[in-house]
Amino acid sequence: MIKACIFDMYETLVTLFTGRIYFSDDFAAELGLPYSEYRDAWHATEDDRTTGRMTFEEGAAKALKQIGRYTPEAVALLMRKRHESQSDTFGSIPKETFELLSELKQRGIKIGLISNCFSDERDMIRASALMPYFDAVRLSYEVGIRKPVLKVYHSIAEELGVRTDECLFVGDGGSRELQGAEKAGMTPVQANWFRHLAYEPHIPSRVFPEYPQAEKQADILTFL
Image (cartoon, rainbow, N blue to C red):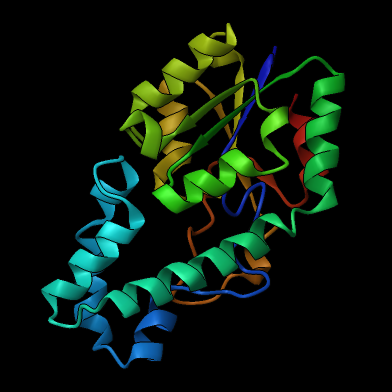
């Protein structure tokens, strides 16, 4: 029996592919940076940015310094554009997301959130209209571990007061989160309702046909 539903955040409850979209290649193009060099330097900071050892701003500065293109103005531009993009993401939460979370609450299902996130994303998540729905939250920037590390799944189940085999995990599939949930004993469901918005090279995950698929938010209710 499913007693808890645990969600990923990006491309599951909200999408980055709305409003003022801004990714690393957009930043590189705007400043005329050599993209492959910047991408490699930027990706090298990802683990530190995701697990709280470095802020997003610090990661950007380090990457730019590595390729010899650092200026305070460049970092300020990136932070402003990121804030605009994140503001549009959390200002455009689909009504279907709220409807699903409300229905789960009405049915007495505990709701959790596990998100791999950077410092600026953490701030937006904490300030979002979604926060009151969650009974437990694990943000990688705060807890220092990220999906698919098994500990993050086990710890949130423990806080929710349920066994992992009583948990549904819903996510788009990035970061091998579905595989991690399965290994932890949860029932993974791949969320596909934002997939049509994504484009290369930013498609966060391929489809994993070995897992149940949800094409719209309300489909999650059929897995309870």
